[in-house]
Length: 188
Length: 116
Image 1 (cartoon, chains in turn brown, purple):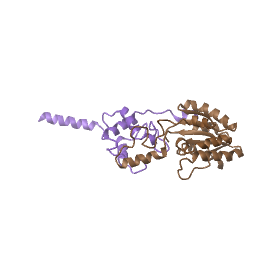
Image 2 (tube, rainbow over the protein chains, first blue to last red):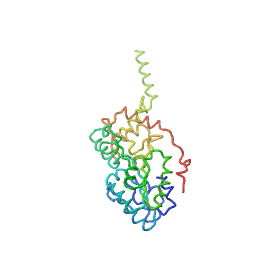
Image 3 (cartoon, chains in turn green, cyan):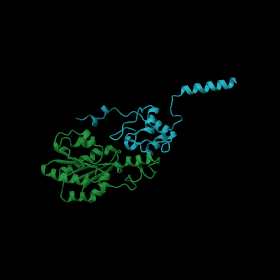
Image 4 (tube, each protein chain N blue to C red):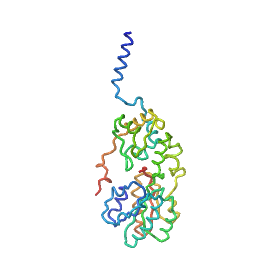
């Protein structure tokens, strides 16, 4: 989260959504203007993030602001068609993925209920309890975004590759197009 | 009789030399697998570094008795893990894994974390 911050902090930026990623941007980014955090779904609504980000980026475009979203992977599974909308209407948005390969909001609920019944929640097929992992196969969100008209990079698994990808992605967004950088992360 | 007495004293002395509740013959390697399988990493991170959802566990974990008691009986956000889900042997191995995790670099030496 500090890497995107290092790249955008001197721009007139606006965080349009941050998915369910434990509020890391709000912990680490200096927010001094009202539009630097445009809010969340209000009810843990998975799938809200991507469409909300594109809508907010459309509004920010008129103001000349640089829109950035922290896009979680489970959220993007719900309405990926909005990526096409952003490309079609040339809505500049930097989407940095917090890809933990799971519907992680649900993981501990499953774990808790299994433990109450003295059952093992993880059946060994995936890294997470049944019904919560998004892997095997691993979605390739960079290819998904590219197929819908976005510049994209990833999945980035080596932190040393992140700065370069972000650098180019910011240039794409400043030129008026959407860009997505898929980053594999720790869970929360 | 004397042999039995000496044997008993030796056993008592050995018991006194072992810290109460300390895991014996624990395997850090298996403990890492347990840490992943039991889902600890999902909130505490893959090397116990902690995060927004769970506190840091390593390096320098809590004493074994404190950690064990919490794992077995907590009624806080983290679910309690009873022996049917996480055996005593696996919990001891898990603790050995936490103990094996080395100190990370000082945050002051990482430029990215020291920007204004």
